[in-house]
Image (tube, rainbow, N blue to C red; front, side, top):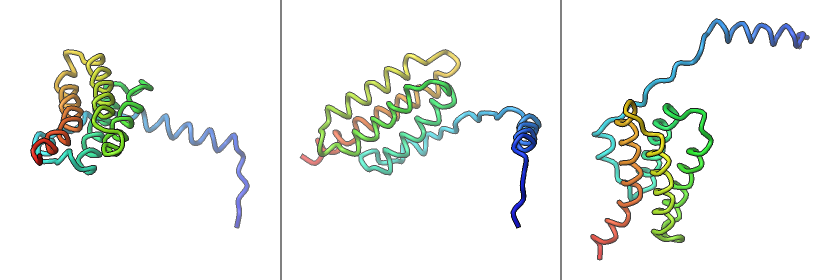
Length: 135
């Protein structure tokens, strides 16, 4: 049977629950060299893995910045449409993401940001390297 709730009381109870829970703690991204180097970035699985890890890193260090989500999606889109758009589009998207990452790099986050730069490079250059090996 349906229950009638007063909206004000409901909101107040939810607010108290949030206050008791405290602020959300952000967890530092777990970056594994083994995982990075064993992926094939010429496939979409590898591209999505790399983009997800870049997203974790940038979300941890730049949580309120509105620019980086677009840059990560642009890189994934360019990698997905590599056959249609060509290598230049991937290079442009990767360069924009790397420039943003470099602009947010500090002494305290350089290890993780360097991993993000490495992943962007792998997403950008692995398909080109594979093509040159096949020819």
